[in-house]
Image (cartoon, rainbow, N blue to C red; front, side, top):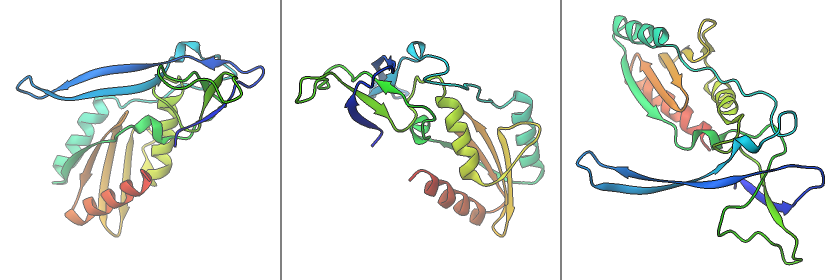
Length: 192
């Protein structure tokens, strides 16, 4: 559950929201699926009240080339993972109230206007990318590179694992199949 229905608190701003609709196509041009995502309109957030910090690092191109060079030099297998709904897995760091989406009942039984209080980050909020990155760093429990905060290294009883993160995409270079199984089991645990 990502949001709670609540009354509009006195002195709090309400962040606007909207639906983002998209079509996903297969390679042959046929429609694979319809996609709808409820997002906050970050432009309506107020600095110091709804958010404080927004910076989130992204991996440099030179770091990506170095990642592949090290993986190739050590004869490691590289696997790619896309984290589903990554931003919504991070806890929110401020009290943010969002207007309900169109079609959602916005008045309570008492007739008062109701809004949604975020419990997790939501796509479109200014701090969502930073919060996701902090969640990822905490859950990976690997050594973070001092030169690029998007590169990680784990060495343990299961072998060596190099991880490169680019927003919600992860590259994982592993020394053995056992290491990959360990990484997948650890990472799946973090998504719960």
